[in-house]
Every structure is written in structure tokens, then in C-alpha cells.
Image (cartoon, rainbow, N blue to C red; front, top):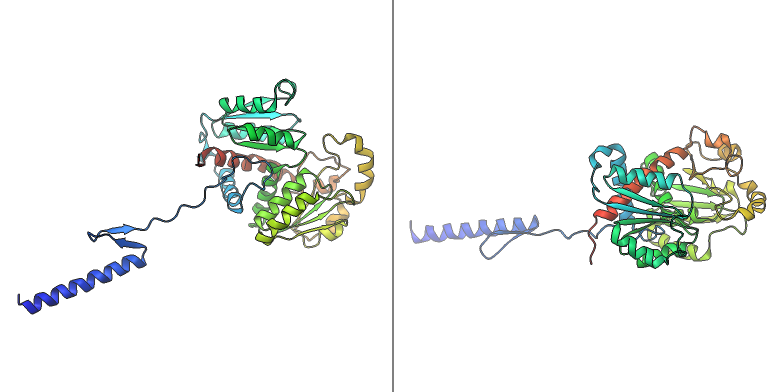
Length: 358
């Protein structure tokens, strides 16, 4: 081959190599000094549920909740896929209050995932009496992989979580009920296919259920219209935090003392008991104050025709909700109850399989 042809061949080969290199760069690849491809590795997404505990719902990010709902949906549709996924894991359950849904859904859930649960009632383990809360937290952290605490005082839950080295889930306190909110939002998502810009109307007491629902709605971009009697609104501390969350997510939170104002444009109408555990001495006063806020046929008739009816249970039929509302064709109350199982299974799975920085 002549020198001119060799030079032309080398020049053509160089151009082709340069073109291949440019194409690799455009596809996200590069070549090293030897000409071999060095694929760009995509950055790892932020770890899900980076916070150790799940106490209020404000610890969770929007991505955390989206991943949890997606997983809960998969677990609900195909539970057999997840059988034994938490084999060898143990759940400590410290309950200072009675429970049906929280206890049964968690015990069944951890069992279906292959783990086991240890239940301790207030007679067996009264928190802070026979032993200090911090000592109990440290001991159970040596035996178990995760703990659920159901207490009267949220400060007890926080103290337990501070001293535990394992994840701690709030199974209900006087301040928050985050596990219920997971089921609530999942039920709405299941019905309407989305949570963003969904309009939720909450009618009743500014209690622990509402506190967690406020945080949850704010995180997922849903709108929440709250109607309470005067003097029963959510605390200023909670509302101040909610404003910051909503500023980021675009959620709208509105407060009023008129249930008919709250249900306008609602996709879901939600209520809860007027007298919670520990408030029995206020019963008569509360029944009088809340009577105009009963979820009944009059409310339902003024709500949008596709609005679902929600209640976290237990329900006091004839007080905060009527039989007509409970048994209404649009009632999703027992779907909510069932979804406690699926969302808590997803929560346990994510907390126990995540990779956290030590």
C-alpha cells in the first residue's frame, strides 16, 4: 500500500474512532486510555425512610410515601410474593391502650412476612412504672428488630424512640396516629388513582388522627379542608409546621367551623370519634359541641356525588356518624380498615430492609 493510501486509511480510522467516542459520550459512556468504554454509573437515589423512626408521618418524605403506597399495592395484589421476606425478624408491641385494628393488622402482617411478634399489655409492662422507659427501650433493642408503641402520651413514645437502637413505630398516641394516615391516603389513592390535588374534607375533632392526616396530605400534595367546632381546632404548633410543608408541595389546608363549607368539591369526607380514649370526663360537653358536625344524610346529600365516606374506627354510630353514612354505597370505611394491614406490612418491610448509614 502506498504511503498516501496508508495515511488516508489512518486518517479515516481516526475519524471513525472519534465518532464512536462521541456517540459513547452522548449515550453516557466514555473511553479510557486504552479505548475501552467506561460507563457512567447513575447516581444512587436517596435512601428511603432515612429517619430511624416513624412517629408522626412528618419524618417521611413524599418519595417515602410514594414508594410505600406502591409496595402496599403490590403486597395487596400479590401477597404470596412476599411470604417469608422478613423471616427471622421480630416485632415488639408495647400497648398501653386497647386495640383491634392496630394490633391484629401488625401481628398478621409480620406473620405473613415470615416474622414474629411479641405483645405486651399495660398490666404486663406499664411504661415508666416498673422500669424506666429508657431501660425498656434498650432491653427490647437487644431482642427485637422493630418496636411499635401505643401510648396515651406522645412524649413517652418519643422517649422510647430516643433510647431505642431499633426502628420505632407510633401505633397511636395522644398527638399522632401515623399508621392510620397511611391507610387513609392509600385508600384514596386506590379509589381515585392519585393523591395529588385530591380534596379531603375532615369534619370533627382536631385530634391525633387529624394531626397526622394534615402532615400526610401536605406531603403528598393533597388538599385538606377541616371543619371543627370553635375551640377544637388543631394546635398552632402543628399548623405552623404544616404551612411550611404545603409551601413546598402545593397542598392547600383550609380551616372553618362549617362542615358544609368543608365538603365542597370533596373527593373524600372523613370523620372520627368525638370522645377519644382518656376524654371520658368531657363526654357530655363534647356531644353537645359536636352535634352539628355529625356525618349524616344531610352532609352526604350536599357532598359531590362521587365523594367517598371515611372513618378510622371504632365508630360510635349515632354520634359522629349515622348508620346511613356507615352503610352508604360510597362508604370506604372497611376498605380503610383492611388497608391498615397492607400499608403496615409495607412500612415494616421498608424499615427492616433499608440500608442506613451507621
